[in-house]
Length: 148
Image 1 (cartoon, helix red, strand yellow):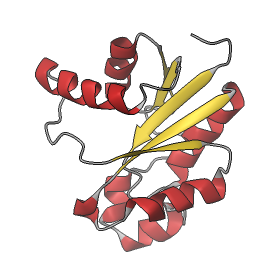
Image 2 (cartoon, helix red, strand yellow):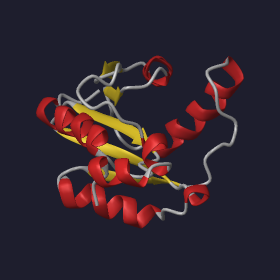
Image 3 (spheres, rainbow, N blue to C red):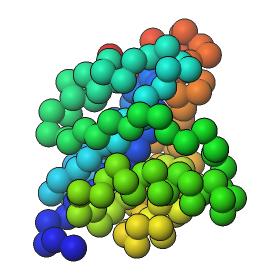
């Protein structure tokens, strides 16, 4: 591992919101270099380049990796985790990451699989009590929390 502190996060960012921004801001204060893996989400009708533009507009210093055709098998069971982790490891294979940032239970799976530190940010959503799922289903919440 390099002496630089390099971290990353993953997400659908559909839509990109203030909770995501809080996580990235926290990581940028702690890391020398930070990557955001953005998953393509055709099912939500939000194209990947629009999501990336929103992230780059707010955080021009983050590095973006695109994730297309992600595995459809999800869950925290061993088989699903193995499938997802092999996919993710391939996306970040050229980056010497030492830290994974998320507010999700799968953060431990990612960190354990890659043998890196798991940084949990606002897991209980106290600083930013929102999720992209809620925003996709509520126009008023989207106006309040989404970042364009």
